[in-house]
Image 1 (spheres, rainbow, N blue to C red):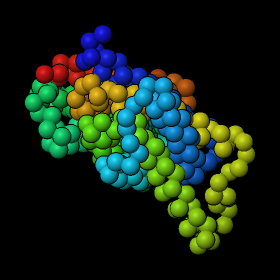
Image 2 (cartoon, rainbow, N blue to C red):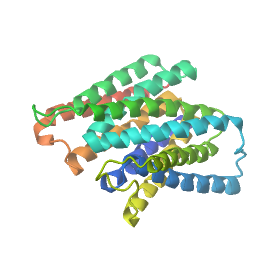
Image 3 (spheres, one colour):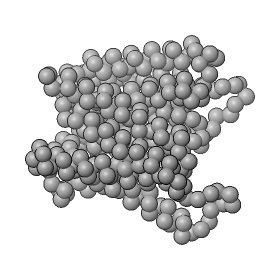
Length: 305
């Protein structure tokens, strides 16, 4: 099979799994930080098992002691902060709207990959620019208010924008490590530091004992509330795995932007499954936004130089 086509397939698979892994948050009682910690645990379990299988069966020669993996540790810390910001945005403004603000990570990560990873020679820049413009237009159209009297939750929007920035930087680190041949070992350190970062925060918060009255436990301990984020973390391994493989075959700027299709899938789920926005009331705006999203993805197909 053509390696470029394989890269596109992996990128689309990453987009699909990226849609699935966040859904447990909608039915979990965990707060953003505790959810991120348990998700990091699930991600670490899946990453460790995956690395062991590839090391044993496929005889990969990746080392767990490569100094470059310090970037993976940094990536884990950044991802922990990004994940908490995104989950907080979901809690405040809903899955559909939070996802669209988060999708602004695409232009940032694409620009950084073009500038820092020297991908100008591998892609047609004009199509990347057009893709960015179309996807930004779609995100703007998707951001609607249910009534004219509704106030925009600025903190929710700020959480979404923070997540976009941090996820964008994380994607550049992931691509850099892939370029260095660390396709599987990076996930172990990233997931471990997601768990350690959020776990340390919870321990410090628990020691301070300054929770407002009625805030509830830091971690809900029912089997459902434990297993949902752990399962989400295991599912996220699919996103990380497929995106890493995609980066190995096509420029990171293209692979990352294709992954932004998850914003479309999550938006559709938010509108039609969770009923966060009335399609009947905003159908023209929403359909127009979807068309711009599809045009943006089409530009990515033409971007390969």
